Length: 189
Image (tube, rainbow, N blue to C red; front, top):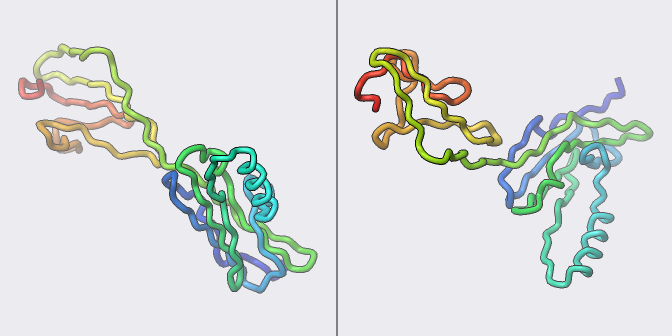
């Protein structure tokens, strides 16, 4: 309707490893007067951010915090680099979107969600549990996979090798992560 639109914007979900850099790009179909960025619906101000960082560093004499982000203008848009900290990065996660200004009109891109890659440890149980079943009958062995972002794929080992789990074998892994055995036999001990 206004003749301005985005030809490039952040992916709907970006998953990054803490301690790395994430580059988000944005470009418009026309040359905008100004292109900026929003973080959780608030404008990012590189100059203001830098001043706050310097004040914080003056208070913490031995602190060596890196800049959280940098913004670079491109031919038809902008590039935001988020310097995801290796620790204390949660304040950097959230929604990022581009804002293009053309005269009195401002258009925002679709948001992209920045998440941190996470893998929680498996929960351990005190002692091993035993399951007694009838030979030839079914069995379910509980196993809850740990929380992860993105959702992880995992396999259960059998004699040091990944356990084959599909419809044609005697074993399946449920959606919850439990091992299902169709017909238990003595080799399943």
